[in-house]
Image (cartoon, rainbow, N blue to C red; front, side, top):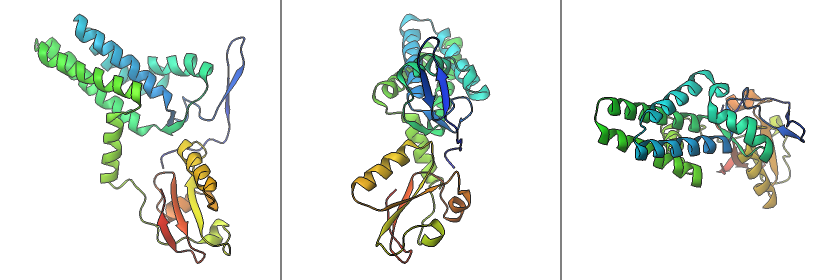
Length: 250
């Protein structure tokens, strides 16, 4: 499942300032992440990579590769950009949308590989290749930081679809088991998670469109997620009164 459940809200207090409530603890709920955190990391990596290439201070690329690798291996407490965001920036601007942490993690792996390769080519004296690799990292990182388009994340999602990570087809739903109304016409059954921002957005859009929505919290009902093959949230289907699925919505 894309998210891990935590029922409590986490409160962070600035020294001498107001408190901030977090829906996801950045160091414990590692299955999810504040969407602004990867963009902060990408801005730092992109800027420093560009600086390294244009000034000739190529060891910066090695430092960035090492920092990404350390963060991936030992967690966010050992990731300097993560600490900057979660300890300095987030308490001041608030928590952003919560998203699945796997795509940006994969993007970090790709970045670490490219930066490591760039460092090795500089060491080998093949400067032109090192510069090219460094510029690729800088361009993609700054693109993600400024526009939100993370190429590494999109590659991960595409590979996940090819690998069958998406939920299997749902042909029917037991409405009684879900506690859903059975005599009010078509209903939408949405499988959600408390830390899923997209889930709340989809639910609000469906309700605004006049749809009857029955939500299933997969963190509280994991047996239903297994039964219906729900691997990612949100998953939503339109269901006829008899339980037959008439349309896949998400």
